[in-house]
Image (tube, rainbow, N blue to C red; front, side):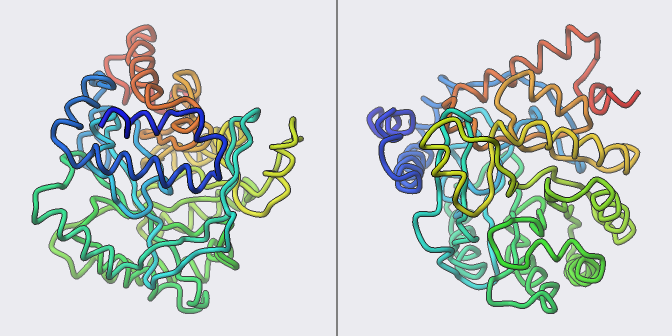
Length: 367
């Protein structure tokens, strides 16, 4: 078990293909996370303090969760809470199975602390995912912490039928997530970002709302926004989505913009298509969080994601308006200790700032 875990942080992983390295890490995490002893060891190594916050009617032990894309197939759900995350998001999942874009499709830019991916929603499809997740529940391997599902449009489905596609996936996965993130902003599926237009968005939300109205338990829908949209477009999308009953905003997805490369490795990574995540996205993600909080007047929760890799960047996201936050790239570049480091930092900031709870700090920059 120790050997399997060391794979995750082994510098040698940086010498092999990024997707292969990720696959090896996930295999190790899956092995450890499914073992009670393994989870106990992880928990003792990476235990995080309580910085409780209530969001969407659920109590989160602290705001920090794992972003979508890391555990695409929901293979290591038990490992994430053992590593200190208070919640996790699996997927993206599409109605139909798809292999995603041709390889190679994941690249690192170490000097920038950035990743570029053009995965293209590779996943086994919603029906197969439901089978896997139902089996996990029957053998009592379901996390006690909140779980979100990231939902994308199937590549073979045209935008005119996107509403039915999203709704069918949500219907299949309804019992296997506490909240659903509608991903209309990934740059890796052709035409997907067009779904941020009002006509398509209305169709998607109406279709998804019809599914929800048939269910006994209400679950929140969150809209994941693109950092590449103009601020006026972001405000317009949020305002429109609020009228159609959206419950939360995720700010943001990956970006197609690129910084000036600092090495041959980053030049190669940045020359490929796909979405960039990590530190270069940090400032824009904060701007979108700030804009979203301002547009909603703080009335619906915002999940901040993009370049969160320290207690300082996490705190900035909170005071800019995020009730919950997520990371992905920082786990690869900083290792698993980043989770407890950030949460401990947030706990100190709450005390130092004189707040009685972290919820008081949410959006404090707007006061």
